Length: 215
Ligand SMILES: Nc1ncnc2c1ncn2[C@@H]1O[C@H](COP(=O)(O)OP(=O)(O)O)[C@@H](O)[C@H]1O
Ligand SMILES: [Mg+2]
Image 1 (cartoon, helix red, strand yellow):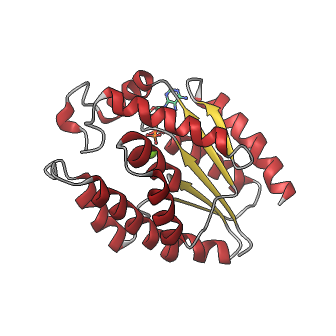
Image 2 (cartoon, helix red, strand yellow):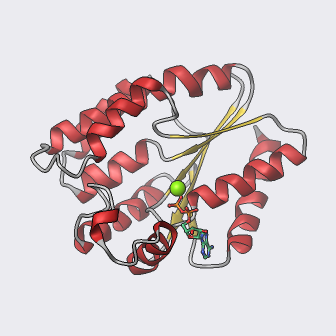
């Protein structure tokens, strides 16, 4: 595999979709072949697993089930979309990956961290990103952007099962993301996302240029 694998992490509302679009556009203008994807990657199987995960009626779902379903959805996306694109030498930009399970299910929900890591290593055949842009934003600011985007202005009915969880949960998730960044400084760049989209994009682009020259 000679492609480059880049992931974007951070809470909803942090600006992952926005930044992936900006970076994809910038890289394409430089003549690079890019694939922008997001879990569940538009694969038929992953989409169906995702629908089970996000259904607000599934209140009784055990954290174990949640960990395994995310990993199962990810496995299909990795094998059907990401690995083939990397094998063709493309740059793959992926919206969320294993760090999301570590932050949301281990740090957020309290699922056993080592199990979450092990299950995801199996699901991904150990495929790790070359670089991860971790967009960090205070919980309230992220939520506010999210509400503005979905037009629900604070009405929980418009949010999915995970988004409906309480504020403390989202604070633990944020701290989890920060912890991951601290523990993997060679892979993860923690980016302050409470700035203009252009400023954030500039920081990501300059790091990405360095990455592409050195790999
Ligand atoms: N740096 C930014 N400053 C202000 N608003 C932003 C910024 N980046 C994204 N947004 C807006 O915030 C909302 C969430 O951004 P989005 O890229 O969809 O985040 P995510 O994919 O992480 O959930 C969108 O309405 C988007 O236009
Ligand atoms: Mg998004």
